[in-house]
Length: 498
Image 1: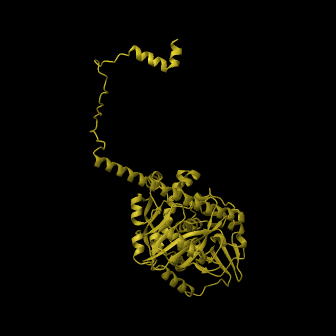
Image 2: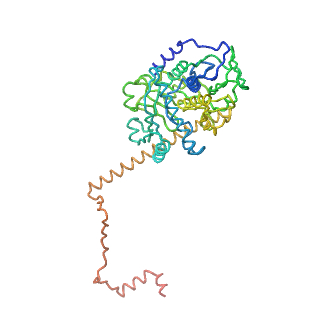
Image 3: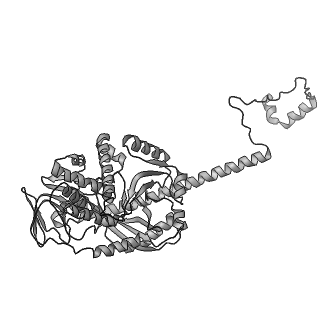
């Protein structure tokens, strides 16, 4: 995918002259931010007949939306069990169904003719770095029976048959989850929105917003825009006019690398054709461009050049798949996701005519598509399903202190995951050694003919009687001389008898 990505990036750089908003404009809906969420809203609203203007301070998909692995599966960043604990089973079930709808929206968009060579392929495998068989069974039952999600549980042997490493144990396979070329998808989404009638203006930052009155006013450096509805879909980079909203998100930068071609050996070691992600959220990878490995792992709460993390990605690959050897990283990329304190996206109406769609975290593909449909249909049709997200209010993320704490929590989480994995592998090796020792002992017993014989079921072992002294056995009488000799040798007994 590196060659494909490079050519796409060069092509996109000269794809079209970026249109800036240089004239005053009226629209039904103004969307601020041209990432996955903003473009999804623009596409859905334009298809429903609204006039839509998208304002982007830089260029389409410049941040995390255009720099991600493109894995699409149901769910949220908040684990399902915690979601149920927070809002109850019924509402959690409805939200999960919405997340599945979002995934299918992405699939439908990716199948459009404006997205050639999108690289859609099926299957996502979530693996555990600890032996969690009991929890796996419980989770499979819940997903299958309670949340109508097609999943398969993979035992350790099956996981290791396709992933040649002892780092992973059980797995959950999502056959209907899929992946697309993430960079191509965001630009294809923009093309679909334009074709539907939405107008997208790049290099157009928002200077100020007046959200009072029926018609809201947005000021940019070179023009003004009026709209009945404003949707804030700019993640952590909404800027000074919307700083209070940006501060409800903890920025987390995720970095990824793509290797040079690895040849057939990569397929011998990684036989799974879809995306692989671990349940601790540390590693996420898949094979692209036939024989290259795209791997996402390092993360920080501070911005840094992606090139700095090429060594980290390289070491991470070597630690998981040592048989791949010392791979070379040909390209690195990364972007900042906005993560909320409660782990759920922020979707809904802040006040009349002012909407928000942000905080999608690591699960942005399906949830941003879902948000686009929810908000567009609420504005134009009066639907209110977005209220399912009402329990997840805007919570301040802690500013600089929050970033430091987030970095420490992330480091602690990774260290805990590594320690748990090391302990699990140690226990596994100990069990294997015990079984080998028992097998050798059993074999030695069989060879010596002393091995225990197994009795048929229901037959109790026969116990041989203990030998008793013979009744006719004569006991030699103790003579008077012997008694006198013993008496002299045991003076203490002499005292007792006296």
